[in-house]
Amino acid sequence: MTDKNLSFMRSLCMGNIVEEILFPFPKVSDNERELLKTTFDSIGSWLKGRETEFRKWDKAGELPKEFLDEMKQMGLFGFVIPESFGGVGLSSTAYSRTIQELCQYDGSVAITAGAHSSIGMRGLLLFGTEAQKEKYLSKLATGEMIAAFCLTESTAGSDAAGIKTKAIKEGEDWVLTGEKIWITNGGIADFFTVFAKTDGPEGQMTAFIVTRDLPGVSSGPHEDKMGLRASNTVTVSFDNVRLTKDHVLGEVGKGFKVAMKILNVGRTGLGGGSIGAMKKSIRLASQHAKTRQQFGKNISDFGLIQQKLGHMVVECYASEAVVSMVAGLSDRGYQDYAVEAAISKVFATECLWRTIDESLQVAGGSGYMSEYPYERIMRDCRINRIFEGTNDILRLFIALTAMNDVGTHLKEVAQSLGSVLQEPIKGFGVLSEYARKRVTYATGIGKATMTKAHPSLKEQVEVFEDCTKKLASFVDKLLRKYGKNIVGKQFATRRLADIMIDLFALACVISRVTASIEEKGLEASKKEHEILQVFAGQVSRRVKSNFNKIDDNDDEQIISLALDAVEKEGYQWDTI
Image (cartoon, rainbow, N blue to C red; front, side):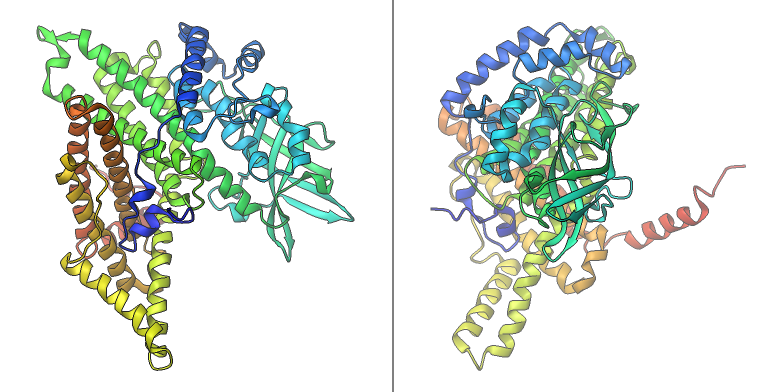
């Protein structure tokens, strides 16, 4: 039985392929599949044909109260809440697929429901006491209370530890003061998960449950945004809000852990939404290419249009494999999937951006007109690479986690050098294990292998195994080259993150195609195998390029030019 504390990617960076984590590919249970079909039929009957309204609300920058009431009646706020509290009790896999469905109609509707379930009230499910759950979950399930997640501040975005909102202990109570910005659902929420500084021996941040009815809680005007304009985004202020110990969520001083766990679990909602928008973009572009004629033929007959559509399909399939895998890890009780969750967010949101960009390009001038949905999808999805952890910061997290693991192993080796004489069995054991891995990196002898993939995928599995060897060598070489200074070498860590992202995605696609072949047979899975062939080739080329840039790169020149632009506050050259 696989250790539920293992991480596939953290193990991979140490040269180990823990196949049991990836195989078999996760799927929705039969009971949930039937439930989802019924749910999607209801959503379709409710939202289909309302494109004109969505466009109108986007321009107005607000979902009308009557529509919010419809969302409540449709049960959109109870997706992840247990049935015992009046919710639907969806698994992470089924929830992600439901947000995907909503996103095929409108991004603002999906984010209003998703922010509530993915992050707004998720902390209550994960860390709440039984009394807290009894008090709030039933109201959150019906939408009587809508939830919002309050972490970001004007001086603390990606640097969550830099928050200024404070909760000061007064007797048995806490007094909360501060301001949170860009809070999704903030103006319509009655339930807030709020993070505040609580300097003390237990730690420096604590999570609190705060409700709108408490004196001192207020929200500002709706923000005028680039995209997701109809979703509610405001500043939420807390002016000497008095809280009892019953408002503490989780443990005092452990708020950072609470925030990170919420974001990790919630990433499958954002990933699902990205896939939904991709599917919609592919559908729109395909329909347009099939009917739009130029030079006497449909533009779907032209190679460059086919190339765009083909790449969209590959990236959507791969994104769906990655997001489904992470949701499956959550459902199966794995504890350490923070790196995989971060990868799913980065990969899916960037695939979506390329997909909508190419979809709009296929549509040509029509895509640029607000009469058609392309430009709104593009505006709506741009925030995905920023909120819930910017992709830049998540790349650093992905890479530095791997560095830390391998660095710790190297420290063990160093310590073993000093203890060989005192504890020869233990000392030589650690040394010989590392020596074995070094030989593996250099020669491929005894390399880690993937055995659970279908035999017909042999070539793509070999690509994965070869790239895994390069990954282990990459981490080892970077640490030996930069040592403790690696933290400041962000070009190098980005390349490592990109390799890790590609390899996890490739592993997920191999698992998904294997499951398809085993269920449907080789012939019926032919197109999926083609997707894997294309994607494996892309990954191989990208990994090789990143590996080669460890020593052969233009990093110093880029840094020099960037610093010059900062000093001059812009571009200093002109043609006149």
